[in-house]
Every structure is written in C-alpha cells, then in structure tokens.
Length: 256
Image 1 (cartoon, rainbow, N blue to C red):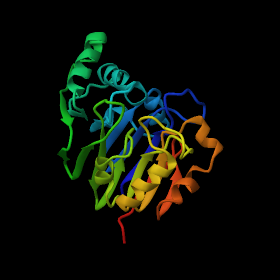
Image 2: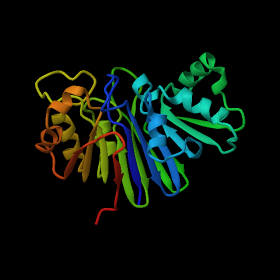
Image 3: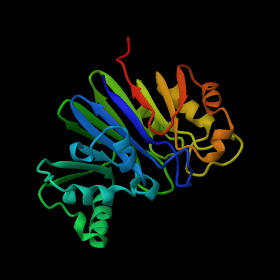
Image 4: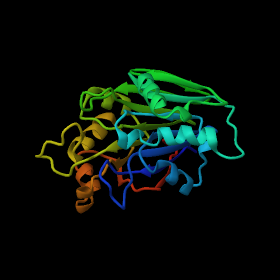
C-alpha cells in the first residue's frame, strides 16, 4: 500500500508548527521525495526514512521554500561517513531546472556527484517511468515561474501533488480521479486575492472538478490555523478533506 508522509505543510513563513514543503512517497519498493524546503532532511529522519535510499526527487518549482534542501541533500550524498552512493539518482523539475542545478553547483562545488550519476529530467506535460511507479506532470500557473503538478501512480493508486499554483486547467487535469490529492490552500478568505495561490474555495473547486476521493490541504500560512480550512474546502467538494500536518502519515488504499 503506498504511503505518503508530509514532511512540511507550511510556507516560506517561519512557523513552529509547520515547516516548508516536502513530501515522502513510499510505493512499489521506491522512495520518492517531492519538494524539499528547508528542514525537510531533518524531518525525513524523524519520519524514519533515510536520505541514502532515495530513488528520485521531484520538484514542483524552484522557490526556496520548495527547494532549499536540494544542495544539503546532494552534499550529504557525497559526504555521509561510511556511505558511497553508486545508484543513479533521478531529479525531476520544471523547465529550466537543469540551469538551476548548474548554478547551485557553481555556488557549492561539493554537491556535484562524486560516486554516482544524476539523471535530470525537465518536466512539462510529461511522463516518466521508475520501475513500477509512473510519474506524470502537468504545467500549472505560479507567479510566471515554470511550475508543475505531479501525478504518481503505483500499486493501483494515484497520488497527486499540486505544488504552488493558481486555479488552472492543468491542475484539474493532473488531479483527475486522484485517490489522494495533496493540494495547497493558502488562504481562508474567498474575497481576497491570494496572489499566485489557491484559496480554500478554489482548492475545493479543483477537488470537485477533478473528482478526487481524498483531499489533504497543505501550504498553510499561520492565519490558516485560525480557521476551519477543511470545512471551508468541503463546502465545495465531496469526499474526505483533511488539513495536513508535519509528519502526518497517509496510507492510501486502492479505490473499491
């Protein structure tokens, strides 16, 4: 049964309750990391997972609250005492991600792989197979920055990660029929412009139009904890709605 662990359910705003974005996926014998905002690696250890065993890391976009732990991860893969990685590491990201990684390596030469290789794939409306795990992406809209949402299919289950995005057709498409939709809901206020993000009402609209079975809200600013975000989203969609929390574990069963 696929398992998702929320490593960070928050935003760029420092907040004791919630760290920046990060999600671990265990499915079909693989371990994937989706985004890695600052602190993700520490929470990975708290979740009982090991950075040495990651098969792939997927980035929705390059804002620092989603990517800040990429350089520390690659540094750790080179310099963990007693460990020498030999397996290929797959890195997936939106258009321009190769250039982003190249600039990181210029700043931090020690992150360039020493004993293993990286396979980097720039994703748009794309599909990649990783053993028995299929990863699909669709372009989403976020602050004029290349960004994608991910659809991970394994063991007869579909997991979807919105990343940061406004309402758009690509988001609805990638989320269609999801068994678990982890979607940002950055604002409880339907009448205020959320910028390049989703309000609770818009997140509910996406879930309804996509027909998602189970919805978990993430990218929660501190103000969100002053409101019943699950209820605000549930007004607009059917199915279970939960508010994500750091280190929440979600086992995802196949639809009956």
